[in-house]
Image (cartoon, rainbow, N blue to C red; front, top):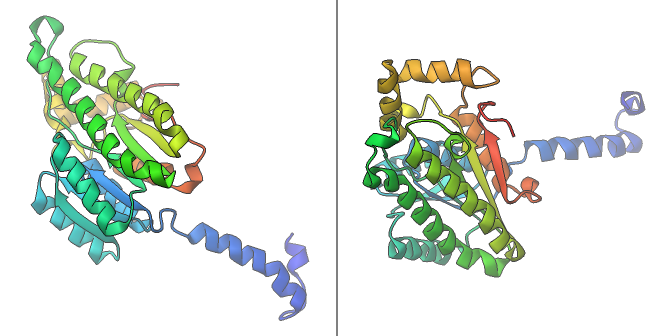
Length: 295
């Protein structure tokens, strides 16, 4: 191919041959979420904020939602400083009215909704064996995660369906597929989120709405500021080690790659899943576990 480019400089043939290459390089450099109107629930959290910044770099118009307005405002300012577009609003992702009012406000401002990520997290008990686990502690994550997925997905789907396009992204954990001691609530709630995501893909597919669940293993850099810290502390305490030692042990002993995923890796996949490049993907449970689970 390169020999064909050895033509007279400035000639018509040279320009004709170089034009496709310039087009290819331009496509490669193009952002993949340009103009996409994206709501991120739980945007103040470690995963939500990391995905928000990645989406912004890819050209998305962001609507950051969560309970802690100060953190959301700080994130929005950071995104603005990097040349992105972001709007922050306090939203209770368990309250139907709060969610619907926010979705309506986004549509009034932006004209529609293209992507929704639910990155909301809830502190819950892990590391307690079944014989000692109370039903109240068990049901906290099950009730909270299924409720927030239901309410947020329904709120945005009302606006995505008429435009015959949209992407809904959810998050899960390896507990959905594992068996063991001390994570009954986590495993049950994760399995429920995956099932909801898969079934919603069927419910909403003919309306042009794609639904993808991202199953990530523990992300060490996110743990110190995440709701998951308490959960890992419970499991680490049971083994008599620190959280850092627990995560290192998991990375080395439970994953095929000998490491755990990073926020950048999860965010990059989320951006791809939300983009038109993934338009053939729906009903999928994306395995981002570094091989702690094998599909």
